[in-house]
Image (tube, rainbow, N blue to C red; front, side):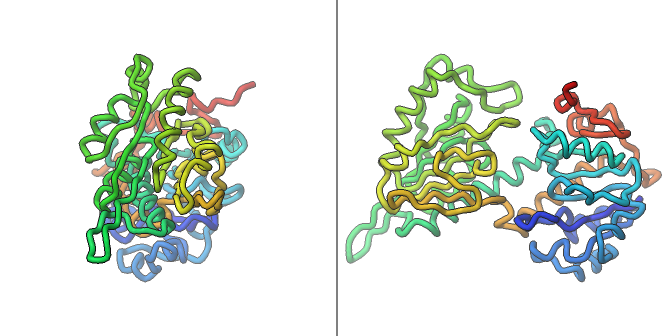
Length: 378
């Protein structure tokens, strides 16, 4: 069994899909691990460390792909990147499949079995494989650190001989994994934290971290969660009531962190131009949903823009701003999944195609798009 670890072709991607720690684990599964030279450089992992863990280093992707049974990546392979891979090879990555018909067709045409890690079901045995949670957790932490760097004042209340410094007010919009970590980090740094979410279950979680919950808590709010634990799209009437409450709250905040995403949909617009203009000069907005269109109307992907003295931060690939930690967690998520695809006795690939983890994540197989959610429409 041969596992290939490829470099990322996207210039903004700093993470890598394996670490020396997971290379050793793959070796113990009986695999030969081939790493493309420089794959871990941006995450602070030199080729020598992969070699010391038992991997072989090759110069090109073509050499790494040759005879590989499993191909590991962070992002979906670019067009032509899988040229030379053997038919039936498993390609495992964050595939970002929504609205990517041409890219999925290219994966099917490459005759590979492509698996999207972000489609992993949220069940107990798959928790260790949950890339969305492992990466969102880091994004939430980094959002507060980035906000602190852009904000020209201290976060905690400080009582000094020269006078008292008031605590910064931070409002977190969306209390999923990223939002909860942002709340916890902001509280650790001494800020006064409030948060909002459309899911009723979030209220208790927010309050358990010492933050105040802000929401219109009517009947619709009580039904606002899917069976999978994701937020539902709310009615226009509810959105209007919530927007009015949030608008008055945002005007008093120093830092706003937005984290709201709905799988397969553009990010909901939560912060309007008028709300930005209501904030004090020197305030900061961190938009973690900027890659999906942004929660803030004025956010620009990959840029820090200033409007009326308010900084709106739209960094791309926020987990990648902590490349070493993000790679370590992502690589462990991948290993946990790969381990379920290998027969421990024969040390060979033995994919159980009817396993719920496989069915939930497999996009393409035998030259066709097989995932029911992404079937091409005639």
